[in-house]
Image (cartoon, rainbow, N blue to C red; front, side, top):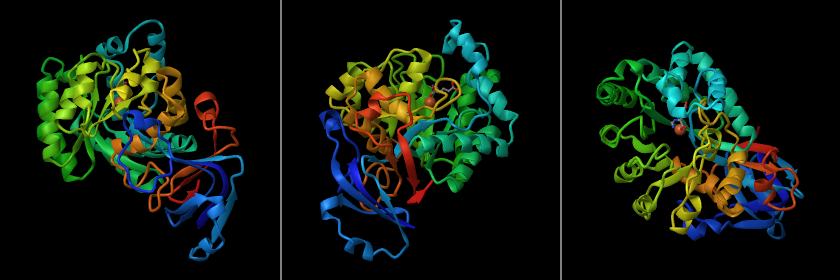
Amino acid sequence: MAIIVKNIKQLVQTENKNIKFRAGKEMENLPVINNAFLLTEGNKIKDFGKMEDFSPEILKKIKEPIEEIDATGKFVFPSFCDSHTHIVYAGSREVEYIDKIKGLSYEEIFKRGGGILNSALKLHETSEEELYDQAWQRLEEMASFGTGAAEIKSGYGLSTEDELKMLRVIRKLKETSPITIKANFLGAHAVPLQYKNNPDEYVDLIINEMIPMVAAENLADFVDVFCDKGFFTTEQTERILMQGIKYGLRPKIHANEMACSGGIQVGVKYNALSVDHLEYTGEAEMQVLYKSETMPTVLPGAAFFLGMPYAPIRQMIEYGLPVALASDFNPGSCPSGNMQLIFAMGSIMYKMLPEETVNATTINTAYAMDVHRELGSITKGKIANFFITKPMDTLYFMNYAFGSNKVEQYFLNGKRQ
Ligand code: NIG
Ligand code: FE
């Protein structure tokens, strides 16, 4: 079924050429069309433009039945791309969260066998089918809030068998979900307890056994490491990234959440697609990132939930860097995949302008998960993933009304959901 959306109050993030991302001052630049139309055919965007340029002739070339939608008073956005999630996990960790309220830190909970290790234990005891069902529900909810693409990490397995199990679940989600999905191998999420006194032995296992097996089954697009104080060192990270690259996996890493760990420098050195978290980012890190191919990605939900210092987004943009915003949906540091909330947090917590938050959650996150050629903007030929908002006076309502769902209807691969 083709779809023609007419009388759109504002069609957001329209782009005629394929751009990679927006950086620095350019992040304030958000192309929009007022009083617009959008036409899809099959799973692709066929045409868009001003209503005054629309003629019924345009529809004559369409070879499918056409659904007509009147979007008077409403906005149309390309779906959000969520370039950093951990949504394949078993159960939840709200009991630990109470310990956090009482004053224990993320690192303290981890040290006593909680946190990621707690999730690994639960995942070990949960079947692939059950993991798939739980992740599917999370994906459905994410889609209802406007997400059309998600990167999903492994990292709650921490043994060869369970890491492969997680990645197989992600593969099944890829095959069955209307959301575009990329898989990221994060065997180096935490050192399992049995390797506590010899973490390099676990790194050897990742390098010699896990990566070759993941690649042999073609289970991942990317390789990730939690490169930070108390987790993996820069030396260990380098070894893992080199092996990942050898097996065709582009790095995307967790860096500088707990300290100035050198993670950003390692990421850029190995041409990571993104470095994520970045609470501890200074002039030296910004210099390294400048003009690199690595997308600095901030995860406001995790900083908010854990009470971390905020990444210096304003300074990063003033420095000329691009910035992406993703959810980090996971059971420990951000139990939410609501990208509308992340979008609003960009303004509330980091003083980003609304135009900057659109770029940070669409084209920039599309780049950070390597789908910018097919998603992230309203461009002819791209996949028709978009949403129609409830009636709004201005786009700024998205940044302002942080607690309500502004998405009225959403479409993935050109199909109403
Ligand atoms: O991105 N920082 C490391 N990993 C996740 C948290 C995972 C967890 O606590 O389960 C994150 O915040
Ligand atoms: Fe994460």
